[in-house]
Length: 159
Image (tube, rainbow, N blue to C red; front, side, top):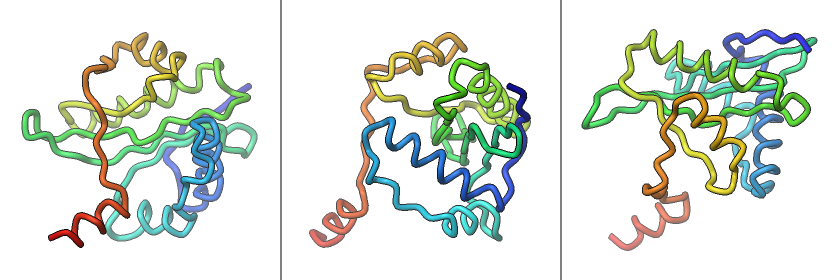
């Protein structure tokens, strides 16, 4: 199947959200997606752009996406975070994931970042093998720490 990798447009966000929902189902978090198409458009295409998104398109349909945003490392300087790299199930194994990751790495290189980082679920062995095969270092001795919306409210309420 032929596809092209390109920068996303605001009009792509409904299909991007569909891919995000597909990933949420795969990760056994089908009810966790709260973001809307309007949120994605506002956050990615209006004045204070919060992310950069690349999409893979085949025959007018988005079959993959990669979304990154800027971060700053106190040890390294400017970095980017790869929030999601998603390939629709029917396209896995086609080279699409490699093409999207390549686009992200080229983008980071153009920006001059010192690191590109992301998370992968510890049970997702195919993704871990894919990333390690590309030269990424999976840091199994680090844990992800988060305060979700309720956690933030609880924290503030306890001040």
